[in-house]
Figure 1 (spheres, rainbow, N blue to C red):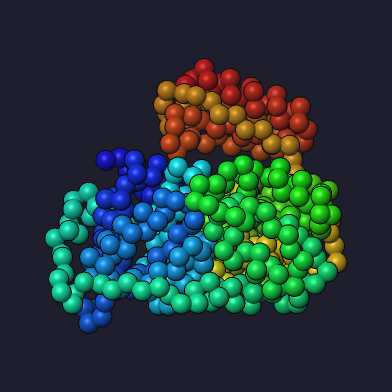
Figure 2: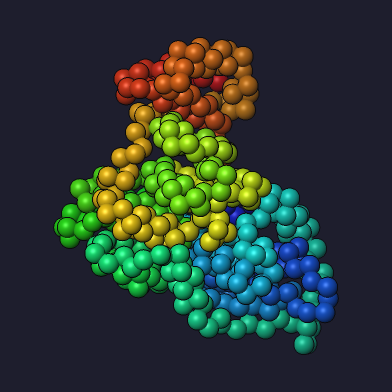
Length: 447
C-alpha cells in the first residue's frame, strides 16, 4: 500500500483504488483513533456523501465499519462537505466522514475525515489512522450484542445547515438575479433553495444529479455553461460550485470569470471596512497573484502566506486566531462561521457585498489588478533535487532581482509527479512568458 492520505483525505478510482473493504477499514480505524471517549458513552459519527453512484456503496461500507467499531452513526445523506463539517460540530459528534471526490470526475470517489468540532485532521492524526489501517489493529476490537453501534438518519440535517449559512446574511438579497451551477453535485440538494431564501432571484443549472453526471462538463472546473446561462438570462452574476460545494467561483454579467483571489479580495475588504477582519490579516497560498498582495497592502491588510492546500490555510487561520483565508481555486474559509471551505457561504458573502454597496460584481472585482501569470510544468528526473540545485537557485535569484517588486517567481515541486512547476508573474504578458521560458529551460537542463 502507498501513502493512504493525500492532500484532502483518501481518494481514488472507486471500487478499484478506493474499495468498500478499504472504506470499511478506514472508518473503523478513524473511530478508534478519533473517538477518545471515557468509556461511559459510545462514540458518535456523522456520515454524508455527494450524489455520485459509488457513494451509495462506499457509504454502506463506512457505516458498517463505524457500527462494527461500536460507534453510533448519524446519516445525513447527500449534502455539501461544509454541511457535514458543520453538523459534526453542532451535534457534538466525535468524527465526521464525507464521501466525495470533490471536483474530480465521476469514476473517482474519496473519504474526507473531520474530528470533533468539524475540523480537518492534522498530519499526525492521519498518520495514526493510516498505521491502524495498515496494521489491522482496529479489527482486534469487535463488540458484539448491544455493543454494536446503531444507525439512524439525522432528521432536518439539511435545514439545520441552511439556517446556519442564512444567519450570516445581514439583509435580504432582493433585487439580485443569479445563475447557480450546482455541478450536478451536492449543492443541488440545498444550494438553489438557500439563495432563494436569502432573497435572490435564482436560475439553477447542473441541478439534476443522476449519480453519473457530477462535474461532467459543468461546475467550477467547466465554466462555459454558466457563462452562457448568465448571458442568456441577463443575470447579475453566476456562481459555480464543485461536486461537494466547498468551492465557489463567479462570473460577471458580461461573462468575466472571477477567481478565488478576486473573491477573497472582495470579502477581505468587506470585513476590513466593518472592523471584522481579525488582526487586519487575510490568509492566502503561495499561488495567489501578486496583484492580490498589492491590493491588500494598499488597503492596509496584511497577507499571511501558506503552502498550497486549503488545509494549510485552515491551520494558519486557527493558529493565528484569524477570520478569513482562501485559494485561487475558490476555497474560502470564513472561520467565524465555518471550519472548512464553504462554497455557499462564499456565494452569500459575495451577494451580500453586492447588495450592501449597490455595485456590480465586475466593479467589486476590479479592485484586484492581476499581474500576468505563466505556469510551466517541467518534467524532471528528481523534482526535489532540482529545486535545491545551486544553478537553479542562481537563475531564480537573478530573475527576482530583475523583476524586483513588479513581479514574482515561484518554483514548486509537484506533490505527486516528477515535475517542477515554474510560475512567473510580471508587469506584461510578454515579459512573464519570456522569463518563465528562460527558467523552465534551466530547470529542464538541470533535471
